[in-house]
Length: 220
Image 1: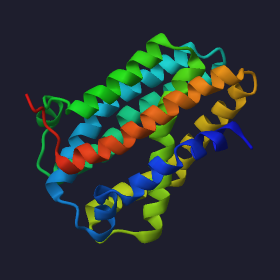
Image 2: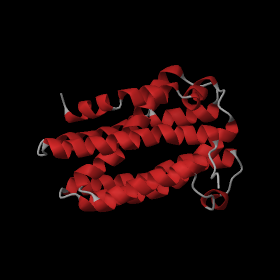
Image 3: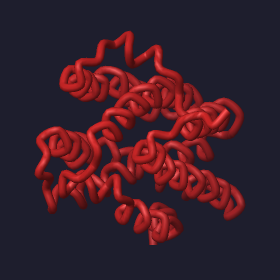
């Protein structure tokens, strides 16, 4: 069994909960409130600003030039490629960039991105990969799951098409391959630390969709 297989098995219950969440189900049958999707898209755009910076830190920490190039390219794509997707949605909702980027992060968004940046700065390279991998991998698996079902809503289908695409899958597989490669030289304790971060940020992925569905705000 590859180490990545162990990681995925460790979040089996979390991933099943994600697929059962009304946000995900609503993407398929079109029942997801457009206001919730709009809220999610804005928060996701804010998330990517930090995620892309975290990827740049990952690249800088790698001792392999190819890893550096890969994470720098992914950092660039998070801003350019995924921002392009978000901006297409912004037009549908008549939102300007100023409207979006002056929005405050929702509590879960702030908690998630703060965790990612802290791990990227403070922890070893291999641990940081464990924290960042779920955002890649869970989105791919959700995209592939939804691709089989399709959506009655054009906006939601556009989102599904992006994360089920071959281009996105190639990016994800590359990071999974890095994870398997570096794990070969790690102790069981070090691999446990990767798994710890992997599970935590997988939980954040569930909570992020729940945040969007509930349009989470600060209670105080």
